[in-house]
Image 1 (cartoon, rainbow, N blue to C red):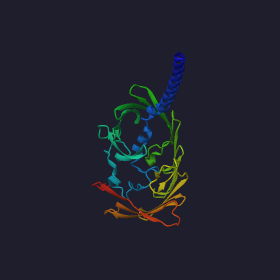
Image 2: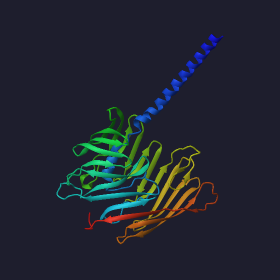
Image 3: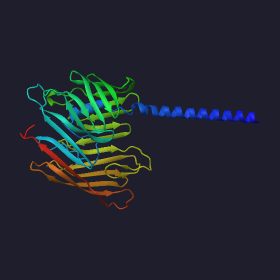
Length: 363
């Protein structure tokens, strides 16, 4: 009886051990991609932003309540623009480029905001030691994330070294006229991930604009990201997994209408879209911007359907050059289930902007 019991117990524990091993194997299989690929991001998009942010520093996927004209002053003689947004500050800063270097640009970018991992992040650029060299040698994103550009090929970054927390990685970039291949490796040389980008053909030199990336595919994860542009190379559409954002502009480069497809979330989770609280609905969120003749955003309406609606009005304080330095919002909201189509007041935002001008008055 004891022997039979022992056999039964042994078989029981063998089955338990097998189940535990299967469970642990499944957990490792699920978590392995996260462990391997959590430390990668589309670095070529950041390099593109370093080229392009000085021309147009806003994207449709930025937070909805961030002023789209925050870095678009009415005068061109600015040196830096600092926007206080909530508890954060974001700066767009540039400096003169030495004349007679053969470069078309008369200024180069030093700082700019960039959307990283779903949040606006301040980016700082460090250039080569030579005063007449436009080549970037380091990109600092803060939070222990620094990118060294170790090698260039024909003024195009070829090899990056990424320091992230206590680890570092190498990124190789291979570029053709319309493609970019970006390969990530860890410090021991193990392959991590590859991004395959498609690019628009080179912009006309007369426009003096950098090449734009129209999309990328993550090789291992299989996810895709696409962008569309208008004739001025302003972003008119962003498509990522099930998220879709489209935007149209005025003749003065200001966004006019924006539509965002809301992703599906758990019904019990609340997602703050920047306008009203969505409780898991899937559909279109429609933004409409109204600008006055001075180029100021005076009204923003957001319609998420199902009786969720936002109406924001803005008032400004300007400096002696006519650029706004303070924006105050009056916000009215209609929430789902409120019955009557009445708007209730809600806490508005106050955003300040500090503009540093050049002494010569030109840039």
